[in-house]
Image (cartoon, rainbow, N blue to C red; front, side, top):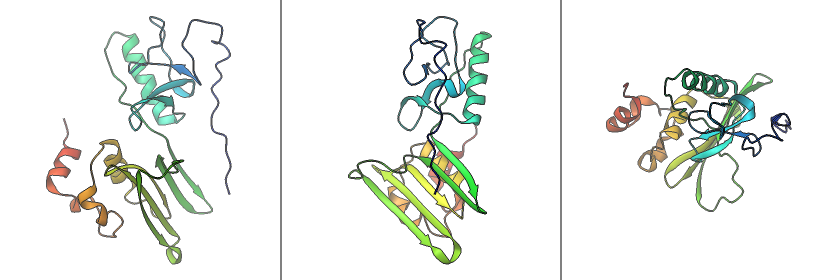
Length: 189
């Protein structure tokens, strides 16, 4: 069992200022605070989460790096927008790789569809949560091989209703996606 409280931003330095603060310092898509020419990013910032289409704490190193780049570009006069991130954790315990992305344990599961695969003999567990035909979260234990594809489906808000029966099959992959969907998801601009 793993128990953690997560990250608590150290916002006491700005509590008595004009900065808009919630659980962290609230920023817009440019990583700008409510005060002109003041930016925040990293663990202290409440930044855009594409899954909930709103701000929340996203204390992850890759997202802090991206947010820092966006803040730096904007401070230097190059208009740049933060595309957002979402909650994610990837770990390895006792040689068991685990990844959890998005909303994996909603309080009320009424509006969700749950896809589950359990293969105890291979130490594999997969759980995918769908809402309105779209992936909103997943947990994979033991087999993370296709986690990147699922992350892309989640991030692009792709309706997987027509292919949901194949999502947990061993044959599932980029090449098994419908051609039009592949084009939409993986077109390089």
